[in-house]
Image 1 (cartoon, rainbow, N blue to C red):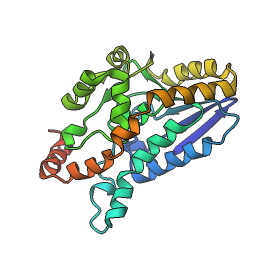
Image 2: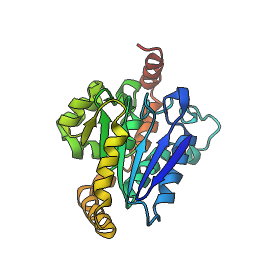
Image 3: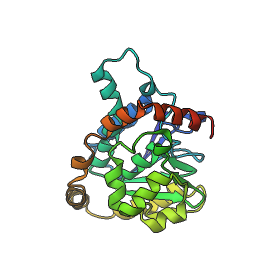
Image 4: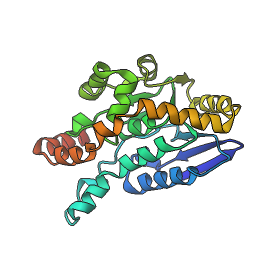
Length: 252
């Protein structure tokens, strides 16, 4: 499911769930979290490229994942599951290396959330971003909302989340969601070029500056999103949300 390639100071982390178009389930979430923890103490790798497949960076949260139906779980077990994505994004955001999400095909919902936890985002020009959470009756969580607002501002964040419009790569670039676009199949190579530039700089200084910038720009992110998974669990249990998920799965 996950392949890691190391080339000098650059690592490429590729995840692939085949026909599921990289939809996140608990196994993939946990696996990617463990990968981040492994890199946390890596003193060789200076930049990490996170990518999916040609068809999809990720199609979002798997609506067949166990989190949607846990009748035998205790309250603590259910809450622990809902916060797995929050921990995943926090682990990638906390990495000392520069992280670059390379997006081909699509980044949907949770896929957008994970990409937002990276330092930079590069997408193929034929790719799109899509945040459909409201369509299925839940809020955007995984700590993504404050990260989104920081990048695009409150008005555009509302449009992205509430209108649930598919956003072409060029629009995402002009709005500040992406840092660069590339030719089709070229997102990873464009990310490699960015990584090469980072790798030429002094390792310690890069890490210090990244930490300083994050400490400043992200100072209130946790304070404003610490309960987003609880909100998602609550809103997802509403009858309107259950009906919305059924309609979404039926393509309506």
